[in-house]
Length: 337
Image 1 (tube, rainbow, N blue to C red):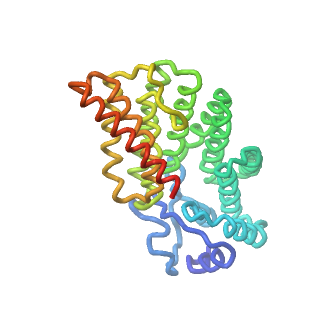
Image 2 (cartoon, rainbow, N blue to C red):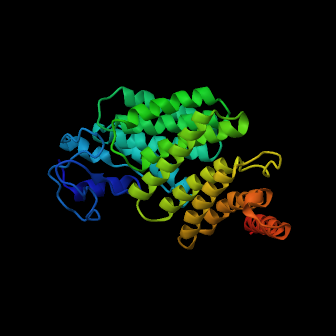
Image 3 (cartoon, rainbow, N blue to C red):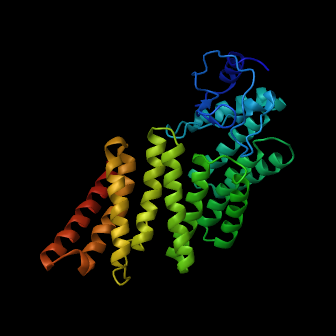
């Protein structure tokens, strides 16, 4: 197996990517493949971070544990497409990097999801799954788990809830073979988001509601524990918290709260606790993340104004309503500028 500097040289010649630090479990705890900033460290053997069995990995497959975060926050999609083409052209036939190629192709599918090109997203994910299942690799459960939750998200957006749940179950089955990480947090987030969207569309059973809340809370815990400090961690926590708040408030990201829909005092109090936690993150987060938080926060004050448990007189109720209105105006100003 070539040394890390050789791997670094090959990879940087073909694609510019951000390498996530991956914590290695097994014989050497708290050790990461990239914990020395890719400065030419020779690594004779590493332990695979993926299988929960914590078995030693073959050296040739160890480097395939690289999971990429490509231009996630920068939005440089043109550069991503150029570098992806270079990677496939130069490494596509190299079995050593076959999983890396699949990971990059899956990221292209996720990009299509973000661009609302859902049919193309599904096609890419289906191809990735087919290719992944044709090979034996420690990374296959990870790749399939991620691809399946993306496909579930597509069907969720189309309100195809049974199909979305089927793909999410497949995602969960694959992630059961993987160490808990930020991607298992994404799996939990997608399950909760599925139920949240179903709640807005046709309602939930009490059991589904409980599972949705637990899944959102699990996702937040996993992001706090496993995601590296930085904008992505803040974004994931705020995104998940926003949907948890709206679930408690029986709200929606796309419409004003339904006045005639009763929300219990207990659920409003639960939403308040989540809002307090997000407020603590705002000094660290970009304005665009704060903007997304304004919708559930405005709904919260609207619900407080409608619940006698949260005000002593009509004047206090009006203040809650005014606070919600001010936050809504702030949201509109964010969108304008």
